[in-house]
Length: 542
Ligand SMILES: CC(=O)SCCNC(=O)CCNC(=O)[C@H](O)C(C)(C)COP(=O)(O)OP(=O)(O)OC[C@H]1O[C@@H](n2cnc3c(N)ncnc32)[C@H](O)[C@@H]1OP(=O)(O)O
Image (tube, rainbow, N blue to C red):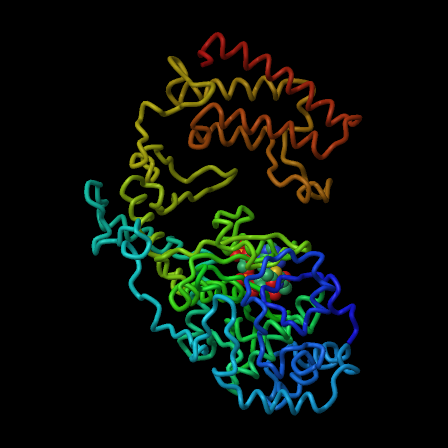
């Protein structure tokens, strides 16, 4: 066998005990393995006929491919893998190994399973995770801090808004985030039977073996730095379990882990989703199933894993941290050091309904929304203003500020009217005075020698691209119509905004050396002086 397969693998996270006969290859990797081993660590992980990977009994991917083929292909990655994965091993294993493996596989019994260190192998180590195991009711009981919404949606002590108002906004309520939506969609797939999550190990059951081979192929493809023999060893090791996503009997991905039940933690050896199904939520759902299974079936409280650098982000999103809080005595010596990844830990919550988190999140969101609605009006959307306009954007009829729907409800009072920087007082407090002031300013501009470019709207026949560039045109004539209507400029700020826009438009369309640009600068300066003088004499600036 090519020794390079076993030399310093890119990832080397096996916690599997090397068999005595494996020592030669083990020494090749031991530079990064600093594991202390208990005496029963040396128990071979496979039945004796499989124990030495060098005899090719189990590590030939070709062997496993042949089983996979019998099963009609267990993985979408496997077609390509059958070439890619098998190539390395072709020289090392002969056809007899296929027979050995197949025969042994079919004869496999619990009695053949070695007494692995600290790990009791369950005789029924194939566990289908049924959705019926999932606690249906979450809320206070599960999260411990979520008050289930009451029928009326009220929480005692808070003011309840009237129902009429509530109806206005209910359609605008966002009921789920991206995480919940993905989880719910996959949950529905599970309920419809199109998708299932299973937990199996090498128990000799044909279907399980086919799935394990499919999963092995995905790992081989998705974890290219991992020696393929190493992947096979661990996936087929009876101390390891694999939680898999199966869709229409094809493996979509999975996680292979070793539960150290006496230590109450598990080590995730491999985790991968087939290439074309990544970033669709399978990885998250898989991890949630794993956590639920590991807690409820294996009795684990923590997971540890050496995460590939480029997968750290995924593990962080699954609740893993780089800080290891688990007491060292519980895990040191059980998992191997690995220099190609980052050791990460995840605490398994004793109560969380991992496979039904979406329901819990939905209820929490609902409870928070209810609370916000009781404390604030921000969720209420009022109908807009029926703002029918005639020429020059002038409204057909005056709209009183206090008639704007929702303004009063938001706390506005009439004394806040005209809260602009140039708040009008005294003589300009009524519309007539305001109109007179604006009219005089327009006349001042109109009489100025630099006003000629601004007197009329720009004619598109003269300047064809003007309205492509200037989206908000304005001119003195249009402003005059607005002033005279007495319906448009209800504050002085609105008038000022139009004047400023008129000059800004001129400087946007024209370059600084043009007469138009220069006119705009001069006229604006003249205007500003007059405004200051006018305001000082007739109104106060606040
Ligand atoms: C112990 C180990 O085996 S380490 C090696 C891990 N495996 C690999 O790197 C193999 C290649 N990658 C994969 O197989 C998959 O992408 C996995 C297993 C890492 C993740 O499975 P996916 O189905 O893609 O994850 P899922 O769709 O649930 O994504 C969950 C979140 O993690 C993010 N995410 C997924 N992969 C990564 C990544 N490599 N790095 C950072 N973030 C990631 C997703 O964007 C998503 O974020 P969001 O919830 O904010 O939208």
